[in-house]
Image 1 (cartoon, rainbow, N blue to C red):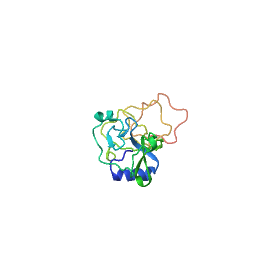
Image 2: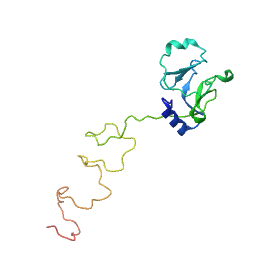
Image 3: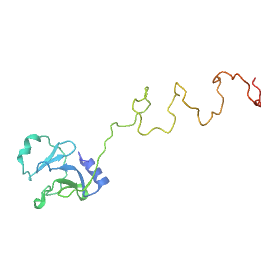
Length: 172
């Protein structure tokens, strides 16, 4: 959940709390803090050790929130993971922590109306209500629940032989 500004950082801290890893690491190259989702260089500080990484990392993110004196690779413990500290400041740590995840939606809001053509790919979660117009062809088996009202058109030709028991009401 690499925060891109103070608002996102505050939200990450609100949702995930302190001592959570948020997707910033210098594990690939000491001192070059990279967003693990995008590969973008976020920060280089005084702790740069391996200058061989410099040519491949060029862009700098405009936002960081390191606590005072951080990142510091404390006691050379290989602190390669950025974590949220109290108040939402950042600290480098050598231990893995719970991961604070971020999800982005693909659209700003749901589609306001149904599409004209059906999807070629079925939904993972089908709707509970009816889907619209009935199908053009009848189903292979009769419905388990008969309709409340008879249809206006007969469903087939009359039978050749009368039934064994007469109907209660003769047809008109």
